[in-house]
Length: 182
Length: 182
Image 1 (tube, rainbow over the protein chains, first blue to last red):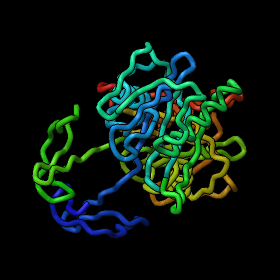
Image 2 (tube, rainbow over the protein chains, first blue to last red):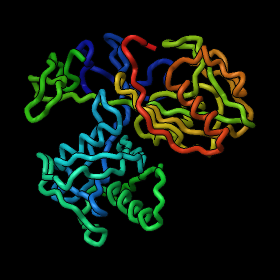
Image 3 (spheres, rainbow over the protein chains, first blue to last red):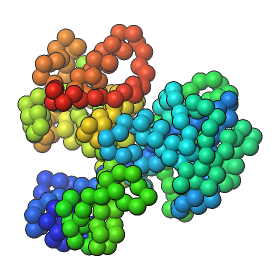
């Protein structure tokens, strides 16, 4: 942010009166511009015990596999966002969504909300952001070609929970270490 | 948003190429300005069976009672945000946070994440945004003076779950009806 979205003047970084954090502040019109974490909503889409993954057609992590997920939009519920992203990235309709993971990633100010879900039918296809969409047995999961740590974490938890037949809701933080940018 | 925060030119509302939603777009520097829902994180702080509520010193709903909650900040986890808000609004330290409610309010693009929590000590006091902070037995809850529907919903669920001694995680949408602005 360089300019004030309210009046067009240049903003500065400072701690506003009565606040304790540095914000973008417009000294021309006195607007404080807050920024907040974003929610990334997604699904673990299941069909007859297999999981639907998408191979990314976009950066970052072009060519790597992910669960369908993306930024929640204004006016949606978390569940609607997760279903919409599954439709957009995998052209697949899901039902019976159940919250499965709430993963905060403070370093990039994102909160992932992942839902277990059933595919309504066996129909799916790559959306514009996917190169390929495919159902995987556990033994076929491309563990070394997953796009993000949160995807690996979600899949690991899912297969562990499947074995115990006990799905809770996992609330965890993912701390990225500077030495390991992935 | 009136001006582009990147180049200072006036923005317009349009559907960018390849998108299906109206966005703020700068035709001068080609920046698309996305807006996304905000997370409001908060606690149900408990001390010996009583719940800590805050009476609001700010608008909206000045003078009404609420659970300590507020906008999650960049760089935090959801749990850290909930604990910080409890500290800021009620000068109270909490521990043993457990996610209790994920309530989407699509109409105002907010997602509440409410945590059950224990007060570490019986110390609390009004922060700058509170007029008064007080522990309530169930029978003392000021049901007709609660600030927001999400607070009422959270408290109702909490006391029902207390009676069954069974706390799940509640994932629900709160749909506001235009005829009932509250």
